[in-house]
Picture (cartoon, rainbow, N blue to C red):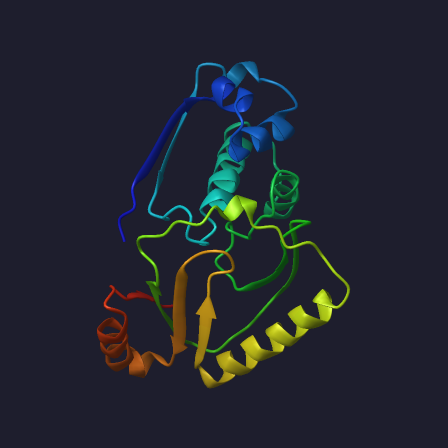
Length: 202
């Protein structure tokens, strides 16, 4: 996919703005750091906006991670997750693992081990963008049990290397398939959906 997006900003200007990454950076620094006054941040991303693929979480966490490394602050990924969640619900974008993650708190529950599998995914509504920031799902009694049930369903699907996934607030959908079935299923999906089908392998 090529959804190039470039953001050039002086760090001071970024911190004074309303973007989530600027607000998170203000929390990280507690004020402008002189070592950053003349620096610019350039983000290039192939993650499409308004599709439920964590584009805003990725922006926030890469900016925090970049400044954390440049200033040698020594904060862990877990600490950056907690900081990012103070601005908006976050995702564990700094890890390659499959994680049980508490988005509102920015806390990793545990790593989920799954057998080798392939994810085929596609944009079910390429002409549509969702204002994912306005999607609010308040915590209600019984929601924890529902997520426990979803986790059990995911683990069962992973065990059989077959399952369906849909972006939580966007337009992407996909399927978990065994690696040996990728070519056949991908071809059928492209005919069925009329859209490009992308492949993500472990």
